[in-house]
Image (cartoon, rainbow, N blue to C red; front, side, top):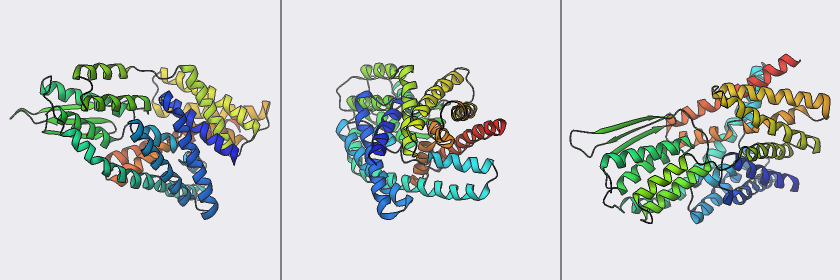
Length: 401
């Protein structure tokens, strides 16, 4: 168990690096993963239920993440998302689609039920505990919105700045309702009370109604999205400082421009963190020393391959298919020529850097919260991603055998 707890800590820490978590928060992110796995093990020992184990483990993660986010004044997702990395049913999603592709319908249906039950237990725990804390925080949000000031720029400029901040948040992986809340709060702080915004994962629709008979509508399409916890943390910090009048409007816009091009980790750090995270997951999947070291190399090379494919601007699903096929090829060759490892552990551990477990959980969260359009969009995206990963592995295995 101690090896698994250490693996959960470091898997969470290194996955946090992949998603650009600020360096000063890496230890706390890893600690949240440790808490998640410890709670999961203990609850499962007493209940033998995956649903209860995941529910209470996620509850512990949500409470810890909320406390730390309030103390450090950063978005909840900076600690919540890394904390559930070790819980999300990424491997189960992959197995489900792989069983479906290989015409093992009975196994696919059983895995589908397991995926849905685990996913909903995690999403429900997040929804319940986050809803409680967000209800308590509404007074703070209302106080910020009432902290109006004379707008130093025109209404149109402030409105467009709000939409631009929302676009940056959406590109960085923020939830749609948080983007809407940010646009609304920013406009109200600057004295713009008549504002309507509607956000979906691929776009922002906002209208300013301050001018009589001359409404201003801005539509922004968001085509590239990736989880960047560092940018979300910096955006929230800059906005909070502006709301409490610690910085001026010009300082805020300058800070936002700097955040847009911020790079938090060098390429070699991302490659290493991918390999290390994959190696730690091999321990959680009951792998031995051979699986640990070989999965590190496969994860390292897979991250490099993903980077190279992305440079050619291939569609995201094609990149996932190619990288998963590459992972499968390396795993088979490793077992055949280098090390007598368990092929399945190598493959499943390595594809954890690709599987859309967090995306699926966020989709279920939004559906439970009533954001049906955003939740359905994210859920469909997660399913297509998982199918492309399983297809890459399935095609490679069929060619090799």
